[in-house]
Length: 517
Image (tube, rainbow, N blue to C red; front, top):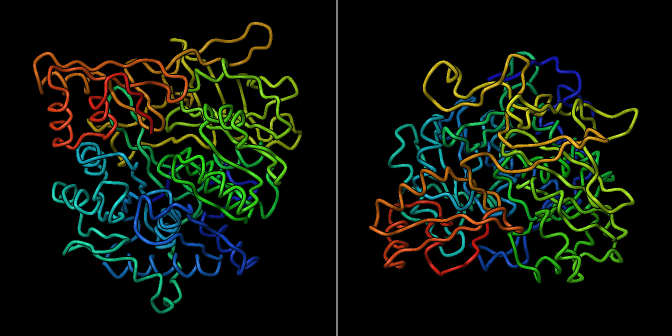
């Protein structure tokens, strides 16, 4: 399935404009077969099954082929939609690459989604298979995934990594110790293989959960925006606390790893001691973190540069908070990345002033200011005063095809190809710089999760008379959720029984508690 113009001149300039993500990965395998490619969090057993894994490029390539072969043997066809809900472990990256190697479409599902969100999102895109972990934290995800599959008619299989799987779930753990898979048969693609659809993530707007489909070219362009601005070196060791369940997660975590051919260490958010242990063990050169956490970790001494740390990439999922962030006084480079939901992102390295670098309207290249900058996006201000994006990283087509003519939610582009992000903004008079001033109307963001406020309020009010749901600004997570009811425990229990996002149910657990993803 092809999305976008296969002749886009700059979307994959650093990797070859016909290169897919699997092509880039295979090149790293050939160049560094015995180097460590992927490493699990050291505290893996605290939140999911099995001891921490550490895979060389050759071992990771073998697993990618083994998973791809199993997907094919299950009878899935080219461009089948493969959903997977996994913690931030090596399996999440392996599943992404294996789905693409099999010629299918990857749909990473956010970890805190429960049945209501998953059914609404996955049901409308024709998902054929779901892959999960036996448990993530205290949640039995196999049971949850089977409930989701029971409500989505096209789903044919539920598969899982982990131990003691329920009957009817196809195990994947055996692939780690099984025989070497048969050589993968190349999937024939018409035209430019990099222009074919690679992944779907989900935007939240006034229409609810909206599929956002991207080609390899568009994913690579998003990765280049971060990779080139961070000046990461070949074979870099990267530590990331961002799951791959969003465009930002893929662009900030998977793409820089693939483009450097280095080592990717994964961190399950967020355990400061485990994070510090990973930094020491791997001597990481780049760390990728939620932007609001960076200053706090620096103050705690967890981002000292004496052990080889060269750059920090901070993701601002609530970009309106970036302008008020603390000045950066450390010698380590800091790159701020503003994420506009699933539509696009903008990356800028801080200069000597320590304040966030201004980003102007118009064409954005990476690295900024370079005569050889690769165009990655274009920024404009709509007539209603919101940020609009277009360019190589920005999705340009509705999914499923034809959704733009029907009732299914889809991203809308104007006649010039811009997508309205909904984020209010203004322009600094002197330097014509973009300043985001708020979040999209009616949308609540907590960490990497967003909700339509009206829908949540209506759900809560139906459960119990007198129950209320409030949203408060929060510098760390974007918003803080607070629920109130005559019987808070009963409302929490009913929300959990409805299988809504765990953050919403958790808002009724403890008065005044800040809930973070």
